[in-house]
Image (cartoon, rainbow, N blue to C red; front, side, top):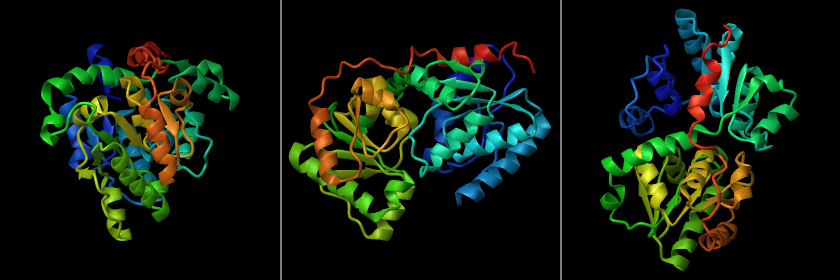
Length: 345
């Protein structure tokens, strides 16, 4: 969302940022505002962690109070988190228009909480900002009025382009970690369906050992607090060749992504970012709401079986990096704000 915030700043449009506090550690939270030179959020609900119902309920209560005070013309939400679901529901129930940034993504897997969140948000929104034509078709196929849908590109492209120069000017995570450009594998895994199931988490960890043994590349794994906790609870050891590090700020992580030989992940955003950066990606899931990455050849789905992950890494290491970025030209934020300026209240 940072490019949209910057666009509002550049046009001197009145706006405010509400941070729900769904992510609440320094490295998952405050560091982003500092590094990206964004104004501090006007509101921070500090909801913390909990069950889906607890998080959603606390966010709805907090957002409702803020909307009653501020009376905005529109609320923008981005992505597929519980924050998106709760803020969209609180807004529409107060008859405040909702704009969903990154609308129309579908994994077709209703066991994913994120799929439920994005579908509900789409169907209560007045402005649906689809990143691609494929996302637009998903929305129209579900009966959403085409007048509400705008293909803008994805703000992830804006964000990568705006922040890459800052990252390389202000941080040198490769030097700090004593690793070389294209001399390491970057791994991330945090989704509940992976880290909360012992067989899947063990499969991911076993695959890291296979990859290190075959290719001799150190594996850098910025580990989510949720994953660390699960590894300890399940008695799982860190594989040989894998280096667990604390979660990183956006600029450091962006630099690690750009310079990796290959990235292994279960994150939707990382699938997009690697595609934009020209770095091969192996996704440890059975489905993805970013099918464009599969179509252009920047990404492959491998699930969590160690051998499948290993074969996917082998294949993507040999792949050519000449795909075309399908997520737009880096001007998505401008198009989004264009639709809002002068819109009827």
